[in-house]
Length: 241
Image 1 (cartoon, helix red, strand yellow):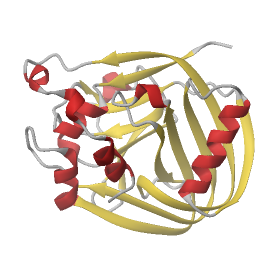
Image 2 (cartoon, rainbow, N blue to C red; image 1 turned 60 degrees about the vertical axis):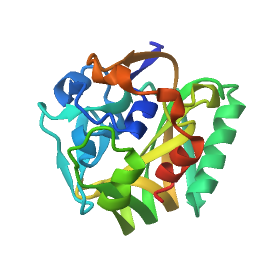
Image 3 (cartoon, rainbow, N blue to C red; image 1 turned 90 degrees about the vertical axis):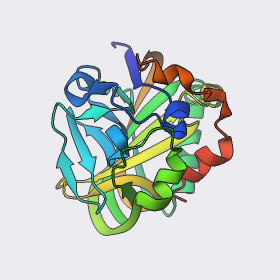
């Protein structure tokens, strides 16, 4: 089986501190993976890459397919390499789902690897968010989201969760643990997920042991003190607060 590679654009630290300029385009990104997640230039919506298509969840929770020239400041993608399939059902919260996913990768002795998991299923409820773009420089992500994000609740809906896992020791490069985005089966709605109630579904696991990072090539990137990002701020952004 061919080894999968994670391709990442920039770092979470840079995004958290406000580096929201384009690093590559969507067209270039899709050469490196067919599944993953991220955001767009100026934090203009949430990104869901699925089956080789790049979807943009807008401020109102609706979805459109991103144009190839659209800029990308931060994302992580890979080519799906299905190494394991698991049936999941009756999972009532995102915390319960994350705990289950942790157990499943631990059983495979893979907690120190990266993973992408695709869960296709029927959901009683998906709590998600997205945000409106803000042209800014050096404005922290949490400040942008405080004013520009919108929450939504999708009920009795079929769709796909794209779940990306980074181990704790990679903290700062990306968010440690699980990061989830959702897109509906009809590609009508989606966003960054902060809670779920999953009735039933199928999870496909792809274990990843190689990473390539595309850093911004601008002088501005080198003005950021990347280690100043706090774990508290990362958790608040991840949890939709």
